[in-house]
Image (cartoon, rainbow, N blue to C red; front, side):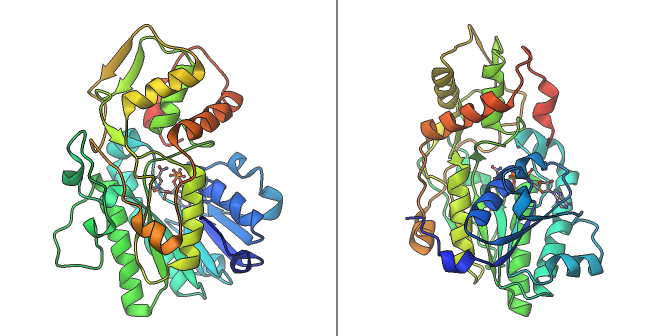
Length: 349
Ligand SMILES: NC(=O)c1ccc[n+]([C@@H]2O[C@H](COP(=O)([O-])OP(=O)(O)OC[C@H]3O[C@@H](n4cnc5c(N)ncnc54)[C@H](O)[C@@H]3O)[C@@H](O)[C@H]2O)c1
């Protein structure tokens, strides 16, 4: 399982857009270890150079904005690239995407430029970082559901079917999957969307649920605040698993077929919180549930049969192991201040 082809990657020119991000930087580290010649293009609006510390001597970094890029700069960035991973996006946790719908719509422009850049150069395959937010929220509105979202529940190739997605961020990713397919139909562009579910791990920031919950526990927030009533359910997937699936998708899918990357397991937020308390060996006196905060879909898990069949992918990390690794990292990277800054939980950075 999760076997990469060394020949495919060794000495291959690979471009990672948004490569200074949480997921992007782990992807870069893995590609460097496989021998690829990696270029990162990122405007550092939420990504950081620190995320690239491990690989910085071995990669080329371009500080470039893909939303307003000129055609000549676009050609320069994409020239000679063989494989492109497109992760650049205006994106953050549920708090950010709910309160910044116009900013998130910049992704229409970013994605179009990247598809055009790939199409006008010699790129052999493009992997587009899509999301579980492309799925209809109606399929995710029952706590305790055991339904796993299947790729055909959001099919960007069937233009006559009714579609629905999770807020502006999800709609945009769905429209960009459709746009990718349009480039395939008209010009034969090769690529595929990979649909990440809630990823977590080292280098993620406090705008995302798992890191926010670890942050509050490390700062000993008391009463400890949880967004929503704590019953909302998610399929949390460790970043290393997401990266493995993304790399395998570049090797194995080029005909536009979307593929889910998620564990298929579902945890209530309150159970995650208790797992974090157990690992940290600390518990607050009181929990406080803030139901005014955005929580997103009520019950979400992805079916990973297609990833298993097409990519030979399956997740290696269960939630407790992934949380332990994430907490170990957070303890070394976070300077304890004794209070929680609520404002940062709604931002991107
Ligand atoms: N984190 C998750 O759980 C998750 C889930 C589903 C999908 N995704 C997708 O995965 C990708 C990476 O997400 P992430 O969570 O690792 O971090 P992120 O959302 O912070 O990453 C986006 C990266 O794109 C860069 N960027 C933004 N606008 C840009 C522009 N105009 N030009 C160039 N670069 C720009 C940012 O600086 C950042 O490094 C995104 O496309 C996101 O939509 C993430």
